[in-house]
Image 1: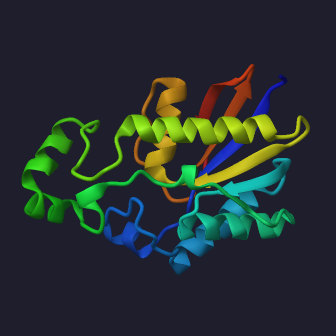
Image 2: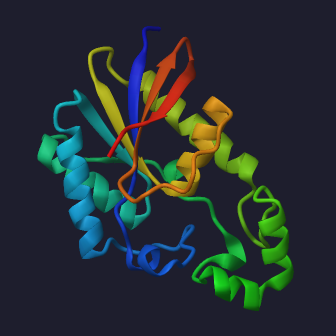
Image 3: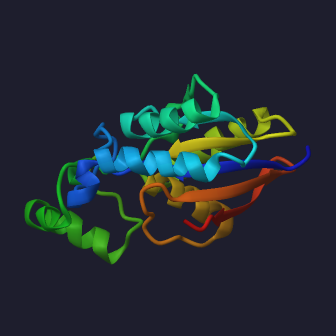
Length: 195
């Protein structure tokens, strides 16, 4: 199989992003700032040869993808629930300070080892497995002459990048964009694109 390019973008900002609340699988819409970030992402992707657009089933990612796809004439967006954010269990809806107050033992474990799973959260290996499966299928279905875009979430993207490169990127800005290369049935690179 020849190499394929997948652009992997984080959705635009939500109000919960702005105030520092854990979103996870909670379906929070884009804010006006997030919509502006989606339009900026659209402008960055305009000349990248994208021929298909995929998105998580959570509204903030779907709306970001719809904005980009509409401008590129690539509607409808294909929705894949495997691209959704990691479920953060008891932390969802809370700020970091509130996690410390309401779930002190779980918060202390999480701070000591970010691989620890908060109560009722999705285990990290499951996030990696579903993201890898989804993105491999997307890459395998991509045409040889065009790139594809998948709009997902910060934690899920960071998990994927770590699985591909062995390096964990810092927390991602809303609208962050990675360029991943898929060759011989595996991802061989995942690099952050400059803003």
